[in-house]
Amino acid sequence: MTIKALLADLDHTRDYREELYKYFHQHPELSLQEFKTSERIVAELESYGVDSITRIGETGVVAVIENGEGPVVALRGDIDALPMAEESGKEYAATGVTQVDKNTGKETPVAHSCGHDVHISSLLGAVEAFNSHKDAWSGTLMAVFQPAEETAAGARMMVEEGIVDKLPTPDVYLGQHVLGSLPGGAVGTREGAVMSEAASIEITLHGKGSHGSMPNLGVDPIVLGSAIVTRLQSVISREIAASETAVLTVGSFHSGTKSNIIPDSAVLQLNTRAFSKDVSKHLHEAIERIVRHECEAARCPKPPEFKYYDQYPLTNNDESVTERVRAAFDKFFGDNSVDLAQVPASEDFSIIPDAFGVPYSYWGLGGFADWKNAPGNHSPAFAPDIQPTLDRGVEALVVASSAWLIK
Image (cartoon, rainbow, N blue to C red; front, side, top):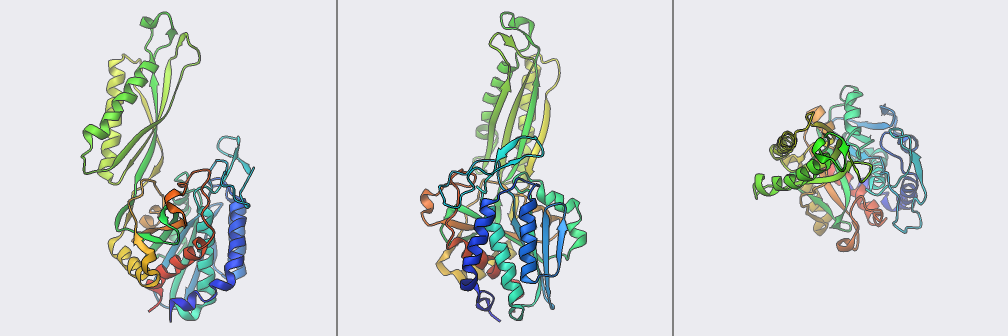
């Protein structure tokens, strides 16, 4: 039994897989609104002859292929897109695609500017390979098509909807992400912390409104907010050890309506990133400490309010699992198996394996031949080279899984 047997149809299926990828690219959908996407995924799985397909929530899909005795390997691919317009210039670009966001009720442009369409196509290709060549492996393959990664809601939704109780417990949970920071066609692995823990924080500051000519009668939340923004810049430089990595960004500051009115409130939106839970905890404690004391110093009539959202856990690759994946990659891909630097972006990938209580590994997939000049994920220009990206995405999932499923 060999990996080559599992990948024997790659040349034969290439044209179809490329057209399938273009379909997903041209039909992006927002988080937890991936209705057409999930329907097409189910239709593809049924066409392969997969007979165990489970819906989790409205748009989550899990396919299970049981093939004799052996380990249970879970593969994950996320399926949602971003609320932004595509500017890739590709002939198959999702130009002018819009969708009504059910949370805001507003119509917004939508694009697969993070590469989840590559993840869907790669996972479907891997499922087809395993289902077509059952004589080449033994065990159980579980393919998890997860919605709403972009809002950190999809993995939690699948856990809340009972994925742990409804499906086999995997021995290992594996996944990948297409990136512009790796050479095209490369697969990059890393043991330990690979993607940051993250959180967004909305802070409401309560001032006291007044006429702009009589500031002494009010509490100016704009001056207060400005002092907070400036003071927060010292957290990274003066409270976090130089050996650690952390990011604290104030991305939004809204207050006031007119030049001669001192408003009664201001709203700040912050984002934090860290590769350590302790550092992340320190960041949040420092933010709240500084904000509360600045509000006290400004004589605010009410204490500030803090709302945490879009919270992503640390993606911390299991050492033994990642070592096993890397050995399989080195053997199959040779020089295209490379080291992956820590990625400051964040993922909800680890939530499902943590709920199952199983180890995991998450790797990067190079998507651009001209990778040194490639756009980053979430850029309106982000659209990976179709090949070798699609082939490599299937190969990486199959090769990694085979470290458990082929003896």
